[in-house]
Length: 254
Image (tube, rainbow, N blue to C red; front, side, top):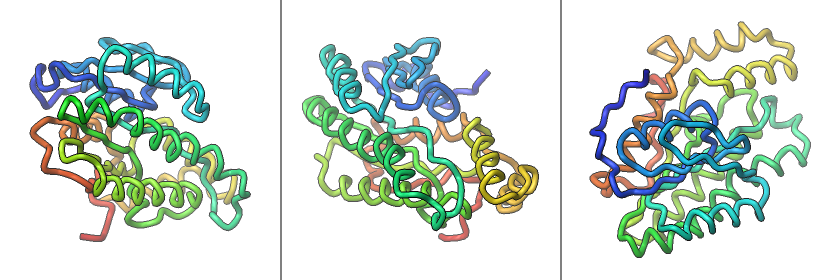
């Protein structure tokens, strides 16, 4: 049972759209926002069955599907909270990546996030309340070895977000959460991908990761979800344009 660190009415009257909600950090975030009173639309290709949420199937790489989904959600009222999140690309050195390996990840991350923000902002502005949180990676601060395409993509997302933080109306905040090595299916598949591309054993890949983390363990998705929810609170309006690591102390920078 996930521990909820906020009041059960913290998001009463607010509507939230959470992308990549079928599992991991996205699912934990959808569950936490719903448990705290938000009306949550949980988006993924598989339309996850999450208690207290409205599940919607949508392929973020399909622009037409995305437009229809957002039009349907917004027809019943504004979105106050938007959590941009999607599956990351395969691991491997950047120099070995083919050009076409960039296309799909950029579509489901940067392109989809940009269109979702464009669609959501007018309603947020009218409601005088908007919170946008992008789930990215600590690689925007320090590139992580052997995930070259992901490092590139996350950097683009961070710059896009920072630019918007200077353009959005004062009632709308946009921030990034930077997960470290988190106990999700994504991390396991990433270790497998690095193994396939470099020959390094999965055990060695995972050991290398944990050796970088002062707390000596993987982060739980609920820990990251709590940080996301905090940035979505009405009381967090003074936090804007930041990138918040949830990484167990992995980053060496201040």
